[in-house]
Length: 112
Image (tube, rainbow, N blue to C red; front, side):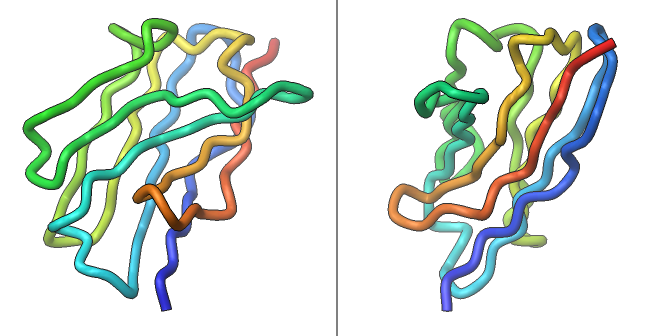
């Protein structure tokens, strides 16, 4: 059974940092590219970042470039999203996905 489980969300003040994790099981993680996608309250899905299977090819949405860093540890079947300099507009549910299967999401709230 393919499972993706996000964790690490929470409430943080503007300018703060959080590190999200996505632990996967049920498929050969090391051979799949992965993405982070978010959904702000009342809005549609927004792609955030992509990482290929080797962790070499990485891209970011302009809205997070320079502030967020995606990475993966294939030995631990885990992907990460380091989020720095957080803004209120980063408030959203963050999902990890390998394209077909999605996690349940983790809520990030940026507020003073």
